[in-house]
Length: 472
Ligand code: CA
Image 1 (tube, rainbow, N blue to C red):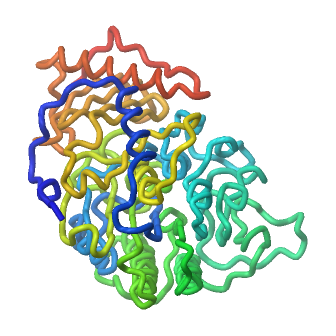
Image 2: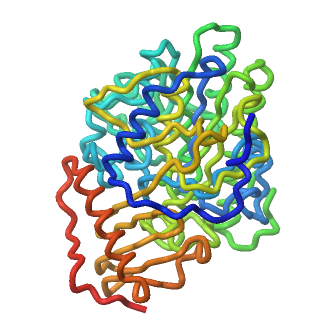
């Protein structure tokens, strides 16, 4: 297999400013036209919650061993510029499910209890894969709506063990005797039925994922398993035996975080072992991401780290949107490789739909790009541009250039406009906007074009590009 693109070391080619619509069209074509060249694989998505960019060994973490995540990354492709569309849970998970910028479907922020969920009309990756004869299962956190029409069992999943909301206690809750008392946001359920769980939930989700994998052993029908942890989101709760692993970490929150992360890493290890033991390695594509960057100082801070990135969860700085991002497919993707070009979680959706030879409904065109041609060396650049918007912040990346803009907020009292060369300045510390006004103008226009194209049901952003003074 050709490998020339997988060992890229640095520089992005000079970028041409293509219209966003052209990029969208290319993405949709890739996702719908590609044929699998190696059979139709099983699909396993593993998603961590609020895990920082620097919170596993292969990403530079030194105080918390993550042997299983490291092994997953080492056995396949590690994307060093792997992004998510959302800076918080629901938008990111929506775009993973649909392959579309979440703005298209009206998901602007995390979904609180009782609020509307994901647009019931838009197909999910589970809908598509079930149509392609996959057995589909969700284990873990949904956070795309509690209403019946949003329930995973009505959104393409054959099986569901987990909870519908955005966060919950990691320890078992007593099962409420009266159905009326059930908190539908946090209650653990199997299908529609509340269950009494007795394990730390991270371990329970690992156990249920393994059970599902074993149930598929020997079956001709392929499977799609979406293992969506709520680890390592707050509340800060780790089992005592895991805390004992990290007595050398003096900061209490970091020690608890280490225990939570280590428990998740173990659960990932059980799942990888189950894939191996059941002879599924060569026909199972495994993808791992965190749903957004680590919350450093606000948005439920959990002692995660995004080093050397700036910012964190809830921000369009790199620390909020660039995440650990791995893909493994034994025998089909070269082990130990690094891919440096920008990719985004919607690409995982497009990739698996292409591998399943499952076309996409033209009404619900997707923004993700099938990554396989890029990973096997026949194409170079998955995206000419990637764009973000959260509240009154926005950003665009084209090649090594990133333009950010933020209106005043609780943490930034003045508007900020910044241009950064990520190839030299991954920490977004040296603003070059004053020296490159033409590039600023071009990137502003590209972002505005994107915003118009994804409009959805969201209100127009309250952003005025003119008259903003740059700040040091
Ligand atoms: Ca999250």
